[in-house]
Amino acid sequence: MKKNESLGNRRVVVTGIGIVSPIGIGLNDFWRGIRSGQSGIDRISLFDASRVACQVAAEIKNFSPNKYLDHKTIQRSARFTHFALIAAQEAIQQSGILNDPKQKEILEKAAIILGNGIGGLDVYSESQLKLYEKGPSRMSALTIPKMISNEAAGNISIEFGIQGLAHSIATACASGTDAIGLALNYIRFGQADVVVTGGTEAAITEFGVAGFCALKALSTSFNDQPQKSSRPFDQDRDGFVMGEGAGILVLESLDHALERGAPILAEVAGWGVSSDAYHITSPDAKGIGPAKAIDLALTNAKMNPVDIQYINAHGTSTPTNDPIETAAIKRVFSSYAYQLKVSSVKGMIGHCLGAAGAIEAITCIQSIRDHFFPATINLENPDPLCDLDYVPNIGQPGTIQAAMSISLGFGGHNSVLIFKKY
Image (tube, rainbow, N blue to C red):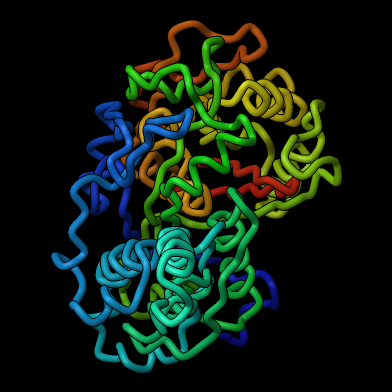
């Protein structure tokens, strides 16, 4: 930390982005899909979904890890780790660190803070079946190392020689957002100059889908129209659609980024968190918890509500979430809420759980960079309780100086990030 930087006040910027999403692998393909309103949702192909009520999901289609990773890495890690490694490679490459003369020194001092909600659910499912059918002696010796959620961070550390902190954060659907927020603070307080952060998830298995179906959380009315199934803020929504993928960001202190001539994509302005202290799966109907996190993020960023032009909403397409989130936004922004653009990209990419907040943070950054408000697709019959401007169906051009990303997770976890133009 430089002498002229006061503790806790270092500015933090984004210098690299990498993404694996249901509408494209790589930032360019992802953003092209967002701009065009492309849906990545289809009938489930990762397993035989005939026994579950929800038969649609946003999968990474035709995914071949051997295009990106060596055979040994593939064999020793789970799908969620594959996604994280591929996204991290793109993000670190874009940051310019891999071409920096001080590459080794920078990476040795860097940290990793990664969000993940569930871990290697595919490994768990396969191993559990093998245990019951063939006995414990037939289980792979790598079952636990592949399954546990910290292994994505661990494998990124091994791959790139990152020797600082390597932590995994699990706060359900707020995991990716919380990871970025903690990375922000880690740099602000001088504990690292560079943090690789974000979220990853791969939970589209029969076990995962059946579990969420048992909660009555997933959409079941659009199995024959998969691309219509995720419809945030629409009156006909009936549940969320599971997605998968990873979003990875390289965060740096501004001084460190400037010193090495790194590309600066956006500034991370603030982070706010709260807990509902209400119910393990249902949010408080008044939206007090999310509103508190929004307000804290604005305070942390030293910004006023009128400084925000765009909100990337959690917008899950569940009957419960969407009106409560709307109420929370109105609670903080008051009449200005009706001048904001608010949208949810989950109609395109589904709900990527622990990766959702990271992918949606990237959406905010790209919105600022590209002067574009992403659409909420499938918003055909607006819910009267959801009465804001959700950018229905077609994205819109517009100047964005600052964007907010909201994530709300089971357990009452509320997490909000603010990004602004650098």
